[in-house]
Length: 337
View 1 (cartoon, helix red, strand yellow):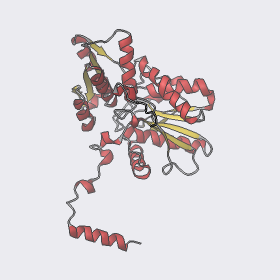
View 2: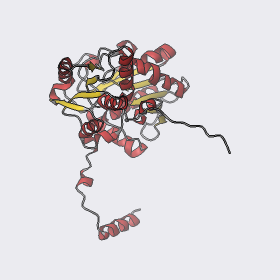
View 3: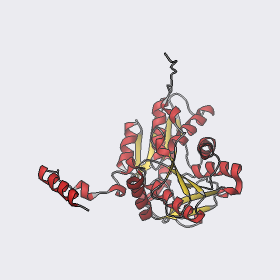
View 4: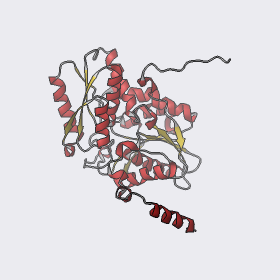
């Protein structure tokens, strides 16, 4: 009998990272560079924010900022909250999250399922109001720890140590551009710093923001539909020195690209992923054949089923199929050329 070895993880948080790179085959424009999607939906709770959640909590533990009985508090647009909620559940912490009320019902239900306590703020007031409320709540809560994702160096640190290294490893160091969205700025900063360090000017780092909120280019913030990016401010941890280009994306282009990825690639991603992928395709067209673009797709489309992204009214309003309707449909299919 052959020797068997055990492969058992001690904690769900041990599964964070080492997400796959998948070649985009059908949606990439003709004559463009190769595009490889880094699917962060393969993290335990299905988003890139799982990485920063465990990093911020572990760094806080090392610094003695949290311990048994502590309460984790954060202002979040959704995925960071989900990451923190699952890490808190796995490690035994209380978790209180403050988020704008515009974010999808799937996210809210998931947060509650993970045991998080929710405080909702008016959506039009944006993440800044959520941050204000979170800070106020933390001041009044004994044993509270505010993770401060927008200025916590552990956010950038985890992307330097894991995301960037995974990209270099899985591409064999052959990558001409990396495209990432900017919410907190942690992904594009951490990945950009390491890839610039390793590859220098041979790699282009591209940041993505909503066309309605071009703050990275010095513009003003307006409400937009790209949940997860475009917080309306330049985050403290965002390192503009490693970013070569900023691409602005419309909600319409983001939605269309998310839908195409699902229908034509079988890659089911969210709204911001559609925006980031659209930007990556523009970069790929500019670079041309023989070049390679890596695009970091932050999360899964399952968090947006109740949003306009997947509003298929023909299915929602469709009556139950009768045997007669089934026969008619089959006949029509058989007669089709």
